[in-house]
Length: 426
Ligand SMILES: Nc1nc2c(ncn2[C@@H]2O[C@H](COP(=O)(O)OP(=O)(O)OP(=O)(O)O)[C@@H](O)[C@H]2O)c(=O)[nH]1
Ligand SMILES: [Mg+2]
Image 1: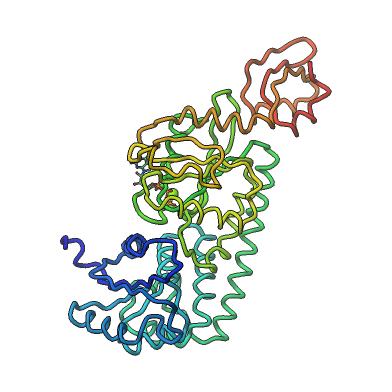
Image 2 (image 1 turned 180 degrees about the vertical axis):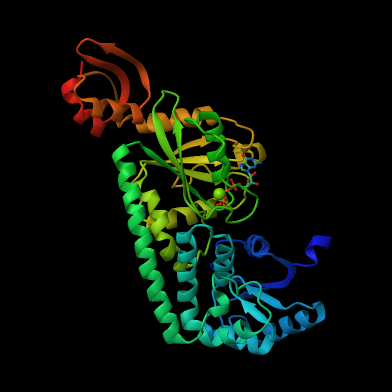
């Protein structure tokens, strides 16, 4: 163990492999270990069990639970993390036998989100998800919320004040829902403004750690329209990005577009979180094109692709054009990739880190957006200054000439604006 690891919360992780599980248990437990580390813990040991079905009372077998208790005592571990969501009864029964803090996968993910949320909206969304998760589990939680332990699974905005009383919880859920409604109104206004500016929106989506934020930063570095210094946070940890961010960039043909980064997905993403984040994930709904970023070096990429698609389906955005962007090709072998995946249609292989094929990707974005754009020459009369300034704000021009009868402009214009300007076409 490294010195900086000594202060980290020591955990034991538990996983069950059922017959029809698609993901190999070792890979699944590796991912859980990364999640624990994202929550600030360290995994001391893992316990796995193959089973035909889940035990309704203990999730694992009762004997296994006793075994876990013994490990914890021997290795001085205070936190046990399960790779699945547990019911209130299971939580309570397990805590009784193991006599340590028991955290399930859902609570672990909620905990990471609670730590990472930055914006007011993000914090509210996570808190709402936490309260909804805790509501049917009040009994299981009372024990360690009131203990001094704290740590993984107990964090969150205002957790000290978190009353375990049901009625109080319901009231709080209500308040947060109302506050979120207010925030959403402001976002709607922002979105309307954005829609009015009618720049096409390209959204980065995909599994956590696929490289979405790295790609956004790279595109901004190479194709930004103006300030390229506003980097988004990218890091080798799960859920580095929680807040949606939006940047303006420029296609090779000069056309401006908006690029948005979104929260990454993970398998078994808690339903409460998807629900709570639907608001900000809605940004994806307004996109004209989705870039599905895939970590090509991950051997479970087909499961990751499937997970992403299931969430996109949930968000009802599968009708949009999608380009599958196989990222991290510097670490992957093209021959190993599953290219006939039924979800993959348009595809490109890139490395965000080493800037490989970013230019080709931009060309591809351009081609996929351009069906909605036309190359035109306009002469706008001088008495329609507002249209001229609107066009100046939102487009790049091949040229601008000031003529006797008005301003002559050559540009790629979107269909909506094309209609608006049709009387000025040359
Ligand atoms: N080798 C290699 N590493 C990459 C590449 N692109 C990104 N990475 C690394 O992958 C890790 C995750 O990158 P992020 O950009 O934070 O991933 P993300 O998809 O935004 O992740 P979340 O925000 O957690 O959803 C970082 O350590 C990056 O440096 C690449 O092309 N090659
Ligand atoms: Mg990110």
